[in-house]
Length: 363
Image (cartoon, rainbow, N blue to C red):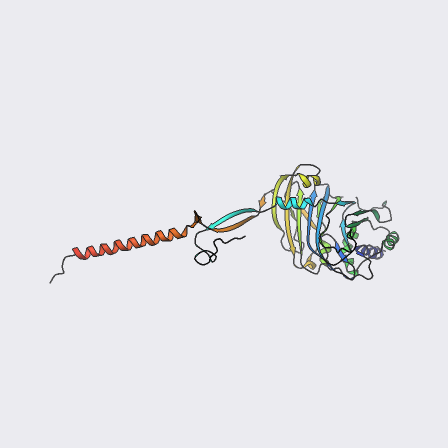
């Protein structure tokens, strides 16, 4: 029976347009599959996570390329989820907040791009899990949101699920079976999404509308296991809004997560909408790369660090040290040469005087 449930649940992940190929890309929080005659690639996945200890919200945005007119995607969630469109302004606001501090760092001696070595003057650097009383049919809700047709699903009755699949034309490649089994065993629910542009014939390309997903959770978890299916190296940008500075418990098979910003702030604008009004929160920005996605072995679970240590990247621009537009090394060298010349002249004069006053040698 469990095999039948798994087989049917897996069919939620692709849009039926004839036979489907294996996914060309699996994003960090789900699987994305195009139709058989096209391809799709996610160049970047950026997500904002808000967690207050009881409720988690994820606002995610994909930047995609390829020629797919339709695709399907799924995100496992630990509890009953609500889904709506997110505010694109959230991402530009966060990008502004975490901009690196820019400083100038001077150097004394000229380098390759400085005179007299070159004409250049400056070297720039630049809802609850289903239980016994849960309804057998797996459809919790369905909405049309921008470029997305969203279905919120459970998987407790294979017959009801089969009916829903037949009515909605979903099919799935087999290779997702093993990756979804842990979610099925844990009683998670699912957000299944059809990606279809509002303009007929327009490929899924560029930045898609952000999706905002909300569910109850007593731990901060970011689903990543399905990224094992990706065939090319993956990257993840994660903005975490919580009461404290947060960190992943482990690298889950990727490179060591890199903190690009950490600091306390008072939310406003799109951020205040996400946090339920202006309030003090701690923002942690994390970047991580997965050179070999097959090594991903778990979901990201984040925890508070021992201290809320702030951090901001610093970008240095190297410049030749000048005063009034004149390189300091030039008058310094000139002064040294002049001083050396004067010293040499004095030495010669002294030696000449010594020769003049020296007594004649004896017989």
